[in-house]
Length: 237
Image (tube, rainbow, N blue to C red; front, side, top):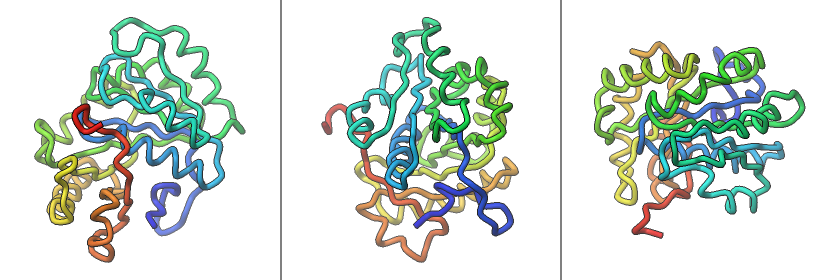
């Protein structure tokens, strides 16, 4: 079990789960699949969970496309009516207010990809910081173009941080090759993830792996987080 999924480790001591968890990263890094798994896992642990689809730019692979799946698992979904366009979404602002209210449960914000997608976070950055209970996880994937080296991954993160006006707090190694991912692919990504985290000055919180291969990685990868492949490519649905 990967305790860092739900608990932010600090010098060996477990802190309480953060109320707001922001998931950011490069297009195609798998951040939405990670966000869906995290939301369902937290719900199964007895938390009230809301997923906020904050991607108002990219019409593909968005968390709100899986509203039915999330709601079947008891997760509330907030998504912009103008998703898939560059049109501002004022209605989202009003509904988003609920995630900043203490006692309303956990909120997982699936930010849009890259700096353009993360720009929508900017309007909420002050309220997020003022909440006093938040984290922003940067999802990386060694096998994605433009972030295949640690230096490229760090450069993209700095653009996301500037656009969102928020600083990342941890790294999630989500390196994969979609349905072709093997245990060796995961193992081969760990050094990349460690170097990226070191360059960013952030903790490497976890390494994800499809459940089909996670058994081969037990004891070989620290903070392993097995995930279901919930986000499907159009030709695999």
